[in-house]
Image (tube, rainbow, N blue to C red; front, top):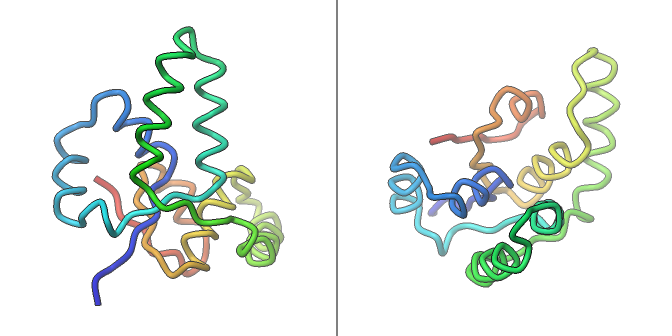
Length: 132
């Protein structure tokens, strides 16, 4: 069975800014049709759009990028994220809530998380992570 992937926000940002060859190669290998994003990623992208100097242009570019990808609801991962958050705090190794929700969305949807943020995401127990 072919792996399915969840793209972290930093992956989409890299694509929008002019992806490095390592990311282009990775996406060719895994296939864009096997990729999705979490709804939290959609929110983070829109925050970036409205904080940018070129909001109109960036809004159009983000909408184009999002039209190619399935969006998975993070609400299915709330309980898992809450449990992971408590565990990470007890270990003194918390990560930001949105990162936690994105990672747990990948975990609960049985997808590999493609990210550059391995340092934080690797703290999420049982999460399968790949980078580029």
